[in-house]
Image (cartoon, rainbow, N blue to C red; front, side, top):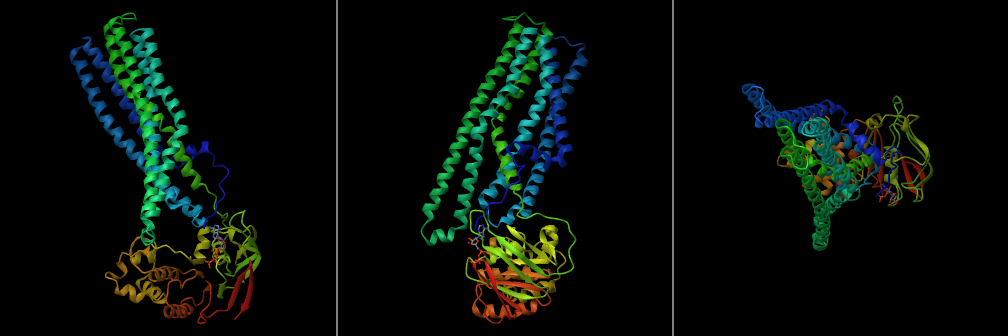
Amino acid sequence: MSASLPTNPETRSETALSRILQVWRPQYTRLITGIIIAELAVCAGLALMGQAGGRLAGAAIGVGAAYLLLRLSGAAQIVLRYVERLYTHDAMFRALADLRVWFYRKLAGGAAAGLGFQRSGDLLSRLVSDVQTLDNLYLRIFVPLVSALLTFPIATIVWMKAGTQAGLLTGALFAVLAFVLPLMGAHLSKRFGPDILHAESELRVAALDLTSGLREARAFGAEDVLAAVVTERQETLFKAQRRQQTRMALMQGFAGLIAKGGIAIILCAVAGLLFPQAPAVAGLTALFVAITALEGVTGLARAGLLGGQVNHAAQRIVEIADKAPPAPEGNAPLPTGRDLRLEKVTFSWTPDRAPIFHNLSLTLRQGERAALIGPSGAGKSSLAALILKAASPVQGQILLGGTDINTLRDSDLRSQIAWLSQASHLFDDTVRGNLLLGRENISEEALWTALEQARIADVVRSLPDGLETWIGEGGSKLSGGQGRRIALARVLLSDAPILVLDEPATGLDADTERSFLETLNNATAGRSFLLIAHRLTGVEKLDRIWRLEDGQVISSAC
Ligand SMILES: Nc1ncnc2c1ncn2[C@@H]1O[C@H](COP(=O)(O)OP(=O)(O)OP(=O)(O)O)[C@@H](O)[C@H]1O
């Protein structure tokens, strides 16, 4: 199933980076402090080199004082560099953690409601690699760039003291190194920057497909074919990485040459070659400052080449996070009534597909038990998705207790309707963890009651660690039917007054299905429930049966 969700109009490529910066806002103090420490380290470095140059020229004001200053600035530089690395990386990790949480929340809140609209390997890539790529923005671009901005005027003044011409020329080379080359790199990388992220994502998609489909691959002897796809995508990624590394090496080499050129100019001024001879102290000070300042910014040219990748990573993250939720959210108070009504609803998943429902109206009254049956593809699960606001009607409205569900808070709606979807997910956790899903206020007794109702209590008791047994990724250590019943128990634990159960008996043998449906009659006493099924067994106690056919319901009271 795939549905393309609308993207918010404000999601434009040029705003992606500013959106990321907004998410980092809570970390601004840390990020700015990191930059300040980096600046102090730069100043200490420049002072150290200046002192060293002066001392070498034997022009110390007083040997003891000069020596002390030299030692102080040397020690300060080492300590500040260390603190800067520690602090900026810590600030960045915090900012990345915030970004991951923000991305996940957005995904869970809106985009994920599109029910499998996105490939999971690609999502994983965005959540892991793309977010990680953004550390370059601060650590390899922002911090060094701000340091370069501070160094530029100070160093140029020092160089000009060694001679105006030589000073200006070295200053110009510094500007090329620190600003022009990185800009050129960023411009260049606009074209190839996205390649690596795209290739990484494609590789993840293929690798995930291969590992999650191992059983099918083996059963159909398709291991080689699937492995070949992974190998091919891996090769594409290697090629993109090789291209980028080659460009980076070239850029680094070129930047290195320019830096050496700047040092050579000052050396010439010190020696009185090509330029008027510099005074000894000013010349040697300028030389030492040139060595530290020019070498310090050679990395920026390389970082510029990451610009395209960073920008593309930001776009990929914001693009998904900004997918508009399928339906708006309001903050109207929860109504007291619990009648659920679809009023003249017309719906299709995508505009290019024919509507699944036309003007469909039905009401599930408070406390009523209804079944929605119909052939495969008739739209039963789609109707559940509409009720849960995982999709939105093209026309018509859905009312809870007479209030349009679009005007309610999503959390309020979810507290009223519990849903067992056709493909409920089990987490790589214990039975207990899967049942509770973070809820804490559920007693041991309630857990076992739900397990009994879902006809799975005996199985859980027989597991080596009972409720504490780890059930593996997607419940892989359980049979399909057992996993389904654990998911069902999880839904029954909810105290929502309305239950939507989509094919709850899938994977159960005929006897278990019958006894489960019989228990369901008691387990749901006092609540409304909508049972979605292909057929009925006859043991269900229902007030109403709806048959969905050709986008219309044919209703029959029981
Ligand atoms: N997320 C989606 N994106 C696009 N189309 C979808 C999506 N979900 C369902 N569809 C399409 O909507 C139609 C109805 O599907 P739905 O899953 O609601 O049927 P169903 O009655 O529940 O079928 P089954 O009994 O086989 O589960 C199908 O043609 C399906 O391809």
